[in-house]
Length: 387
Image 1: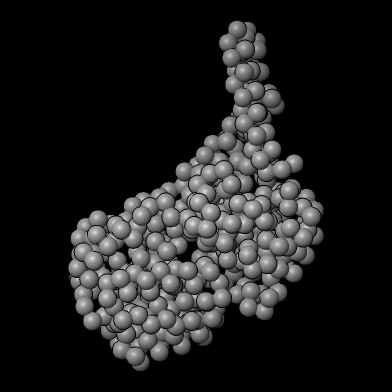
Image 2: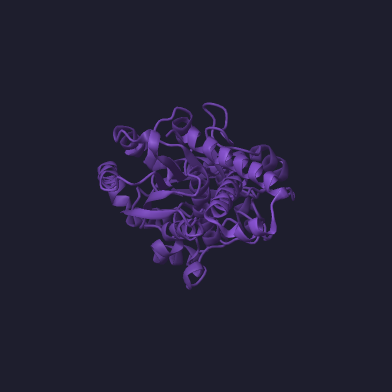
């Protein structure tokens, strides 16, 4: 059964449920007593699945800050990429560079190469180069706590680029600020939300019958948070279950082992009809091709987390990926620079608004060749900064 047929099936069941409901208007009291029958329970489950799908498509999205601020001059910013090999690292890093250059700052890029040793080396290089600001993109404080302690001691302003400060895990806060994405939500909350929305889409698109192969990213602090949000939401679906779990590390990506590990996991789980991949950058790097090569692409609903325009094209072309938890990756990079400006000015960092919505072939898909950008954030930031 194709993905579109499944979604049409959910709609058909809901239509049937509504028709039955109208017919029941003339039912007897005896009929009403049987409202807990299997048929009514199935109708309730179908309605819940459709509701979950709507939640996924609506997601949660904010707007960039509008309060004016003046970018300070003569600032050197180091953007530290978690790994330029992966679009989920390189794309937001490029956006940090773009935004910093827009306000006239001197910008340096350091590639951490998907390795904590590389991340730490980049931080120390920035300190030695007398950087004013460091933005670690996709890197958590706890991953390289000692280098960040050295940066704080040296008076360098560290601004989160999507990762969590050390106080998120009970340590001392070493950064000047995390990037605040959504009102009232921590970094952990944001990642759990992504997992939840992915689960909602699978619940909805399978009509509440998802049998999932769940990939868990073990290296970053946020990997288990993403998995937890996904697992907790999927557990609300009585007919859904995780039938296979594949743990993935950065080393699997670096060595090129991931596509084969994934293909093997698919082969060992013939009952799987759904796949959740935490990082969209892995899809065009071999996982999408593995889905197609499995011969099961038409029977699998595949959704990933963070990604970019390459994922949108896979979705559009039915190329082994069906949906993504859409995140305006470049907006986040600009938001980190806005946070840096306000912190350097002695102002309170503001909520940046970069949130999440599920994208598939029929919902929220941007025009061909374009990334997921539901808001003209560049114009909003430039107006707020007066540039």
